[in-house]
Every structure is written in C-alpha cells, then in structure tokens.
Length: 297
Image 1 (cartoon, rainbow, N blue to C red):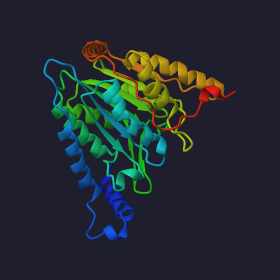
Image 2 (cartoon, rainbow, N blue to C red):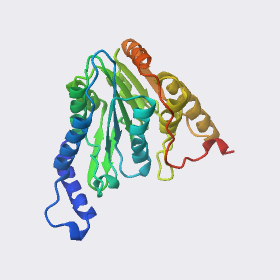
Image 3 (tube, rainbow, N blue to C red):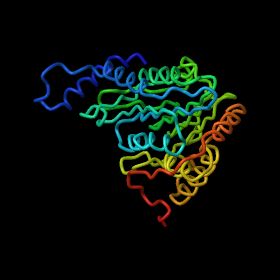
C-alpha cells in the first residue's frame, strides 16, 4: 500500500494530458482531491434510509482499467441495482480512461473505496440495512485483486484490506461479490454469519471472459446480467450462474473455475426479509454486445 500516494499523483498527470491544451488555463485539480470531492457529492446524493425498512445500498468497483470489460460491468451496475433490485442508493468507482476525461468519475482505489463505504454507512442504518459490494477485475494466484490503471496506478486489494475497510465502516449486513480469478481465496477472511460472499472462482482456479475481446466477464454475465434478471433472489442467481459458467467451460474445454458461495445464517434471513419488503423490479438489458457462447460448437 505504500505506493498509493505517488501513483495517484501520477494519475493527476494523466488528467492533465487528457485535457485539451486550450483548456489548460490553470493547474489541473489533483485526482485524489477531485475524487474526494466527487465521492462526497455522490454520498450527499444518496437517499437516507427508511426507519423500519430494510434498504439495500450498492457499491460497484471496477479495479482494472486496462480493459473495457470491467468498466462495462460497473457502468451497467447502477441501473440494474436501482431498477431490478430496488436499491436505495448506488455509488460506483471505475478505473478507466473515461474516468479522467471530460465526464469525470471517481477512480477505483483503496482510499476511494474506504471513503465511499464510510459515506454509505452514514446514510444507511448499518444495523438494519444491507450493502451489496460488487468488485470486478483481474485476480492473482496469491489472492490479490488488481487495482490497476496503467501506467499510473498499480496496486492490489488483499482479503485483509477488504475486511478492514468494511469493518472500519461498521456495515454489518454484507453481500460481497467478486468477479475475478482466484477470488475464492477471499472467503476464509471475509465469511461470517452476516455475510453472503460469492466469488467467480475457487481459490486455486482462474475465471474467464476477462480479456480485451469480451464485453462482460463470464461470471459477470452469468450472475449480474443473466442471473439477477431471471431468478427470484441473489442465491438463486448464484445457482443459475454456476450452471451457466460450467456449461460454457465445458463447451470451451477449459479448466473449471468452480464459483464459490459462503452464506451466513443471519444474512440469509436478512435477505429474505429485505426481499419481502422490496419485490424485484423489471429486468435491465445489458447495453454492450455480448458474444453468443451458447452458439459455439
């Protein structure tokens, strides 16, 4: 974590380079300060929770800015959360060149994740409401999630990092979904009675669809795009996703990723109560072209 300040300072250079020369009439706002301001505004815009009602708040994190596929999923995430899952409020953090172009967006960094979670915790009732955190990026066999915006940011989230920011925010009821290779390595550190943890792969397996030719990862497609739009709840969406991913892997003759789920007893009950109060809304179409994996021989 020691390189964060230096690397984020370099990202400020990217913002300057991405700005047309005619517009450079003064020094650009450093991106860490810019992101602090943008996240504070996003938090202020979140509706406050409703006492006596279990509200869902959602946070999307596209960690790897080297490919569009992760940006695509998190760009889609807010509408799906609001329309389909009736989320009370949504914030997204996205590592991508688009985020430092004229339509600025907070980057996906450790500090920004920390700030966003702390802000959401202040708008929700941490003892009543639910957080859904969806992270999509590359993962390593050492169970590090890539927080990467080349050549300006190079970092990683490890299981202890994620546990720390969630605990520091004081959010009790958690749905954590990690679409990344080797993401099952996060289960031991993060599982508890109040957490539903879903990962795209077992601790020792890669997942697929995270390449420059894809518009959505295989697990993102199976759980986020298809499962949540077709099934009645988050757990059923996971069961659907595992079947879909397995079929695609068999068709492609690749080593199975074995998506994982760890569902605590109390979060299962909390999710049932939430859904009884907030029936699912209309399905949300994915706005990017999707490869027809089912049509492959």
